[in-house]
Image 1 (cartoon, rainbow, N blue to C red):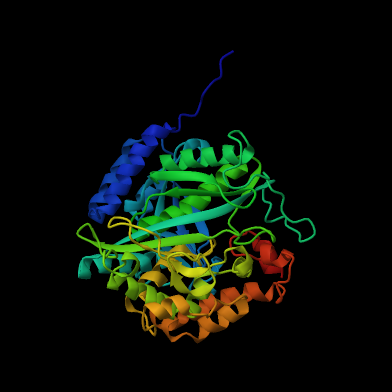
Image 2: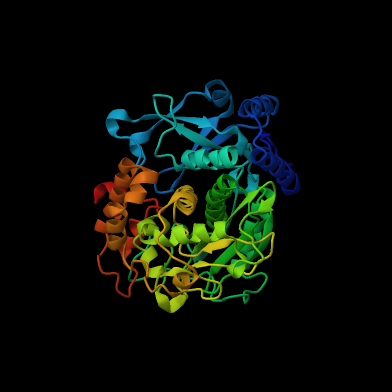
Length: 479
């Protein structure tokens, strides 16, 4: 007896998904008129009867990803007034002013792989607004958008961002929520760099991940196991800063979904195991104007222009102030251990990977700076905002090339020191605002207070269970 199909929700082949998402990405990069995009996608939703829901996504102050599924017909009627309780989001509204609004950023419209997310769904990133109908200032995505647009509008500058995000694959679903320091995590594979066999569990995960990533229009470059056992990294092309940060959130979401389908956990903890390399999120940054890479100078030091070196010098000058942004969890400070190629030295180098900023060998097209001290659990929007604002406007106290290479200062080795430096920073108060400087520091202090002050040699249960990306809402409230 043949199977009876009573559901006809839309399922799109991967090749067609890639074409649709690349076209949507092109529209976003060309900054098509928002009103025209809204009309275009609402018409599509009206005509496509096999779609059932629209996922509207946003990120909180710490960068944790939130998703709300709206019935398609309801969203089409109510997309200008989608309300949610901001007081339930850490770092957002107080209870007395809890109602916030979401509005779809139609340019970010993406079609989702049905085997990963279920059939009949599309996704759009939301813009958070307060009841005063103004962009909500704790929404770092919108603040990055404003800076990104202002650079193009006022100075003709386009941002180029590429990230290299490392993670681990562990056996068992929800391995982070079940973590104990006595048992630790279990590798899904003991293989290391380049050594996993084609049909090993880690390689199967990477292959499925790469397929879904390609279908979402990431423009893949290469994927491979990383140095540590069960560690992975999938690289893709550079793009505009806002698009790049959206892709970071989708990258981690895809990894977690695909791992769960395999009975595993994809983890972006910076240092989930001692004795092996941790995971980073290296951020490659450059600026261009009329298609010309402004970071390249064939006669400059390491082939970088004065503009690029000015960005480097300002980032290095504010390295201590921004360390909490780049290394946003208790666990992140284990990764700054110098025994494992830790990028913890506040200097720039073309060859030394212990330097916070590396200058990759490059040509006119690929000249860039690589900020290596960012953890994979950092808020991508806040990270990009901090790099752009600091690199172009921040204070600078570095005198020249010799100082860049010879500085001996190191980044903090614990979160409490980073919190103190962040709280004291005048520059952070200026670009982030004193209120959100305070809110962010308080969130990080709350996590630090739930964990042992001395890191020691064992990954403590508290630093995992109270990590901001680990979903333990009841545990947080019961502490």
